[in-house]
Image (tube, rainbow, N blue to C red; front, side, top):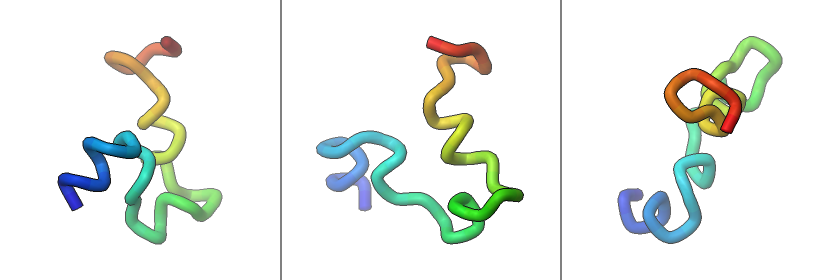
Amino acid sequence: MDGIRSKYGSKAILRAISYTPAGTALHRAGLTGGHKS
């Protein structure tokens, strides 16, 4: 998993809940320090 994340980025592998409307990891993965980059 670490190899995939380092090659394709932190949004490459997420838990299934992150792809639902209640999930926040997909949105937060695009932020830098909690702010838009």
